[in-house]
Length: 367
Image (cartoon, rainbow, N blue to C red; front, side, top):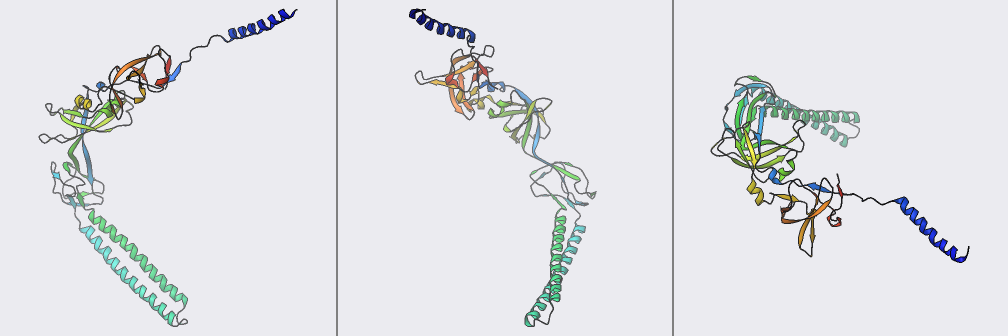
């Protein structure tokens, strides 16, 4: 083989090797990129809908005594308005007054005994100091023990006096808050036991209204700024209120979340606990608050300095491809940025890595 042939062989052989390797690897498939995304939900899914519910007092309590006794005063009746601290029911206090007097008498006697024991101890200590051999240490220790025992007896009886004083104070049943008496369970002069229900009081100065919102709508509830409730007993009146609390756990059977509304008691009608009605969200207040329409995270907006326009990457659920769509943005809110035009409820949009996506790129919505 001449030099010319050897040179051709050295050139062709590596080319054939690379070609074989290339055929062995084959073409690379397109990599589907995972992206964070959300599905658009507008507040309009709540606007116009009504949710049934039931009224509830902001405060309610079934009151009882903490001690046994015989009822001696029952000045209130169903329907009475009471103020916080007002006497509602009273037990006959005589037995408890006697117990308190006896406890105080025993305490006075114990304090006198303690004073005598202290004087005896001080006396033997003075004698020892004047004449160390006149008093034995055993006698001094005995007097010290008598004094300490008397002091312990005083402390025990002081606790008994406090207990007797508390028991006497428990013969008064006072209103824990301003409210209305709605039920009584006993009659005056009856013997009652501790913790036995005596009277029920509710605070109706404000009214709560409990509705159940489906789990697919509960994420929109915090954006509702105002609600209206129409009670079945007063179909011609709507009472305005606000959301007080949104439940954090769904019902296992209905998959709904409890939402508590609160409203002031009207002046011309009285809403009572247990009254049924319908609640609806207020569209106008939601618009003025910037919560109506579609709100998305600020990180989802793709903007260009050159065009001074805003875009969003919309994800096609079937093909998985992304498309850049121009949007008109509104004002910012605590939840994100308001989209006035360009997006529709139900669409999926990318909310992260928007500057690294390309038109038509295939993506996978990350869990």
